[in-house]
Image (cartoon, rainbow, N blue to C red):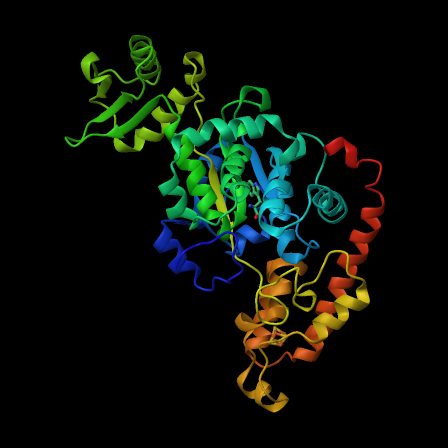
Amino acid sequence: MKIDPWSSTTYQDYARLRDEFGIEEFNDELWNDLPNPHKLLRRGIVFGHRGFQLIHDAVINGKPWAILTGLMPSGKMHLGHKMVIDEVIYYQNLGADIFIAVADIESFATRGYTLKDTKELAMKEYIQNYIALGLKPKNCRIYFQSKNEDVKDLAYILGKKVNWSQMIATYGFNGSSNMTHIFSPLIQTGDILHVQLEKFGGIRPVLVPVGVDQDPHIRLSRDIAQSHRLYNVTNTKDGRIGVFVKVDENINKLLENAEKVLAKLNFTKIKCIRDYKAIYIEDAKETDIQKINIELAYTETKFGGYGFIQPSATFHRFMTGLTGEKMSSSKPESAIFLTDTTDEAKKKIKNTKTGGAISLDKQKKEGGRPNECVVYELFLYHLIDDDKELHDIYTSCINGEKMCGNCKKYAIQLMEIMLKDLEKKRKRTQNIIKSYL
Ligand code: TRP
Ligand code: SF4
């Protein structure tokens, strides 16, 4: 299996995906001591991550960190799109700087929208809803890729360390792929890394919350961040930790700088071998690598480097569509749009596939299957915040005490409240939308 960010396949087997692509499991220890962990984290909907430990530590120690994510406007915003922004709003409340890229270049390249259409769609459908959902203007910046010179410049420069074979292997590009499409992963890397430029708050941990289809872009960005570093910290064959200078300019200064950083970190058994452009640390352990690596990153801009810290990412599951396949803007009956009227939503939920048995009798006897029920998914992802209430629904479904008709009614009721609230709040966004751009 290959993760293709531009296809629309669903991925059912998330554990397998983790194994195959080396995504880490999003364990309890990563979130249970964060303030009021969000339901998407608590409930395993965010199922995997790369490098989230850095974010966890930044939150716990009150250090600066940032969020960058992107939206690709193509059709209306639905509940599946809402998840990322729910996460973003949670992290904003924890103190992260927020950056949101509108992927108008990508949408133009892969979905055939004009830049003008994309702009309208982004403003009306996405940004208005983001604000209605609770995104605050403070420390928050939403921008369009096509208008962001810093991102585009960076994309161009970062491309130097990627070659065509790597792009083919990662994305399956071929001779008939269009050049704008081919370039768009570099733009996305520009999105992800530009927040660590001095102008945007400097070097710091950055979290990119996304659906798992975006993992190829995450891997590319992490690779590129690392390949632009001036230092490489690693354990050597004989078990020592080494700091290696990767470039040929300023070697003496870089070695001297590294010695200072290591002294500051209280390492004492340091041996510098000039000819190897290396420093060996006898009293460091493998678990110290990350700390050393990051301390060095912060000093790299003095020597003309970027000092990018590898961006972290979390991956959430996709919502099942109301029809049983993937939720998709192009199939209106599969999705609930944030701008749906309550009547439209009601009709869609009524027709939804549930995990109920074929007859009431049978369901009373054998119970329902909430794990295979899209109505239950609506509760789980969006409609019920209280874990106890959710748990009660789960058990009464399994025990055959709850019947699908009533359950759907309750989902419709909660959905109506949510949609009406959003509608009201969207109306108030008109005059403040500018303060985000
Ligand atoms: N490619 C993303 C999508 O298809 C959108 C996107 C653009 C993005 N730039 C980003 C996502 C940076 C995360 C980070 O939805
Ligand atoms: Fe789904 Fe509710 Fe039916 Fe259980 S009772 S299968 S949760 S709709």
